[in-house]
Amino acid sequence: MKRSRLDLPLLVSALALGSATAIAACSSSDDAAPAATPGADAGANDAATEAGDDAAADAGDAADAVASFSCAGLPTATVTFAPGEEQALQDAVNTLADCTTVQLAAGTFTLDNAVTIRAKGITLVGAGKGAKGEATGTASSTVLAFTGAAANTNGLDVVGDLFTVKDLALWNPKKDAVRIEASHDVKIQRVRTEWATENEPSNGAYGIYPVKSFNVLVEECEAYNASDAGIYVGQTVQSVVRNNIAKQNVAGLEIENCRFSDVYGNTVVDNTAGLVVFDLPGNPIAGTDIRVHDNTVTGNNRANFAAISASSSTVSQVPAGTGTFVMASRRVEMFGNTWADNDTVDVAVLSGLAIEQDLSKWTPGGDNWATSDVYVHDNTFQAGTSGTSVDVGHLDVTLRPLGALVDALYAYGVSTSAVTRVEPLVWDGIDPNPLGATTGDNGAKICFVANTLPVGTTYAVADLNFIATAPILESDAGDPAAAWAKTARWAQDGASIFTCAAFSPALTPITLP
Image (cartoon, rainbow, N blue to C red; front, side, top):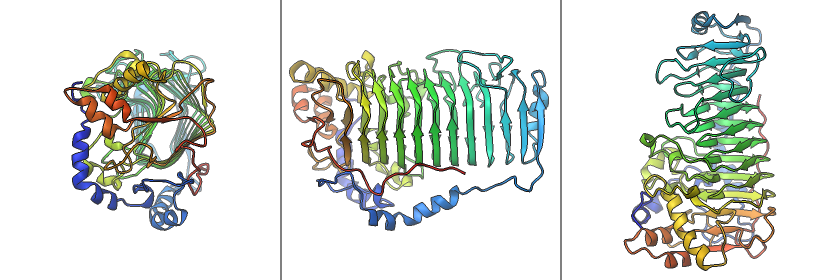
């Protein structure tokens, strides 16, 4: 097989020089690599260590996340605009006083530039978000249409504490539809973001995009046709993402470099990848404490249409047919979810080193490349097409090397072994320390218990051991039989190394102001 960009021989060489230093430099105990051989409580962090080493970081997060602004006792105002008053709206938002409600009437607002807000305590409210595919407002909906807007502009562009946007839609923005940055106490409710054309790389990157913020709520929203993520929450402390719909995007719903997130009740269908939780290198927040529950993640098999010019981005490397992946994150609990018909895999657990082998790039997040403490329990994996067609047959070793590696392994495994498809959960086997690691050590502390699996499921979890298998497959000779022999798989039962207890302390629901 042609050598892909997942250069794991290079990764092993790099870690041979720097792994000990990298692990010692982790900023907190839950970022550090756990012991190689877990005991019966394989998913448990040491509570005393967590309380001690992480106390300063968590206290700082809590202090930052408190409400920073209130309209109590301050003058308030309401301004109202109707379709045809777009210029007046643009003039007004540029000079808003704090604690103003901007009421938009039903109908279509045709805008040639972003709606930019820099005041505090602002509420932007329309008459309703309308239905999927509606490019114009109706008697009961408000649509902000950006089809003729200036290039490279957002739809709604906000920096301001205590901000709420609700009951409206944004159509065809040139860049991000709703971008909210560096803000406390944000609510995004019943907002629809949509681009007119499916599978278009030139569509805006993000539908809903709160970033570098505190106390964020995203609820009852819809996102369609984004060329990166429909709904994204990134570099944020305390967020709730609930009861939303994400369809026809490259990634449906992303939680990136976040601490303390509660993600539930969402429908994530017909994207390239469904619901994903990960950290990227270079960001200062190490993601941790993410609850993902009671979501529907099905049929995410749309061909990856991320722009080729952005092919180094994480999302453009994701093979179509990925239900959920967890990468470079810690203390992630998934329960009550339903996965089905994700043709590559329902759930994958990956190291950050699978996409970025330069350890120095992970330094800002405290060397946060390692994934650990992933507790997958009491979910439903339905019978269907999950795991039967990696990258839905559109393999590209250059743009999506992980998919090409998985396909090469399973093409051999299905033809020769008692394996019919990719297992419900696969682990790349890289973390915590690839040097000397062997299949069967569960060093990432993944617990897979009490899940409902299709009748006849033989194996529930697989360790693909990329440290060993990738160099074999990427060599000039290539030897799928030798590579397959380096993998391992287990049924969901007491004999599995993935049958282990939850981490401690347990995660609790997020309560926002």
